[in-house]
Image 1 (cartoon, rainbow, N blue to C red):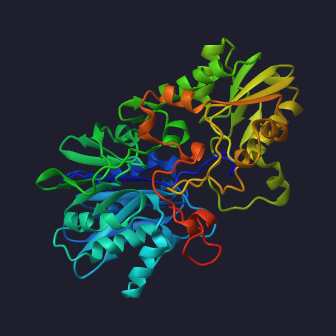
Image 2 (tube, rainbow, N blue to C red):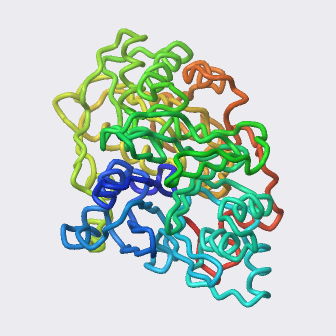
Length: 476
């Protein structure tokens, strides 16, 4: 991710039911594989069959956990979470898993997604005397489940699911059960795998591969899957609605070595590049990607166009989120802290610069400028997704309508802002053809304004500024 000119994922979740396994260590490695989905905080909750113990802190997975902490977290089942948040909610109280302990039941909950009716749900609980420790909708969900009068936790989940409007993939831990839940639209991903006699859930299949687990299937929209000493059982939580998988999972968020509904994301992204080259050919000497997320699309663009693919920039792969603020001089360098151009590769060349998406346009503008400063003769920007013209309300930090450059400018106007010699985007039709799935499986609202879940007017007007104190923005 370069600066704040890319969509930001909300989080990654991982869970394992594994008597006899070192479930804390396996969860650690599962979260490590999902680190790209969130770098603000990390946490693990674990149960030995009698009580829930959790540990979470700010920072990367490798910064939060060490051998000492993992040695303390002993149990038979665990869930973990990595979180991305925006300024204002980057604090330890919002780290997950959320643990709620009530006289009726105690649960730990990890959440990927975003509810659109959080304000209403939270006010109702506050009137009932519920005290909140965080500003996340995840805690709202946890309290509704923990407070349900139903005896079995799976029955409690099914009872309260109709109240939740929005995107939610959940992992819920009790003293003896691991439960996975997916909203009826299936907006955020969640899959089931098996490791010997253990069962594993994860946001992406790459996390299963990391620990040697075999992919079994996706958790279906509206489904509740329970794993306990009796094995795996599935319950209908809510009837499935129109499938609305977030298309940006396939374009950008998920790791290219992951699969969604059996389809390779690396191959899908290569086809995006191929279709982009077919739709918008260009005369150029070199195809260059903005590493690493757009590399498969750039390779596909080169394959279809016959233009050689090569490295044009080197990414500093050791830059992660830091709590050390750069001084103004370093801040002004911006993109140069993260990528550096290869002058010899670019000088005197006509460059086809392939990116996966453009949100605000600030990073693309800086990269085009850098390329031309080192002597690139021409820079032609090709984007392997349609223009992002509408904000996301389902768990992706994709800027407000005012900040989305495509919402306020034509393609030609954006080209001028970027300083590029030409600019073109992949069409929606070309995108759907590339992912090799029916168009009606996906949420395309950020491209076409067709939101699968109705957005409350106050949320639509303010974008993620919800019921929490002024200036505080909710993200997981």
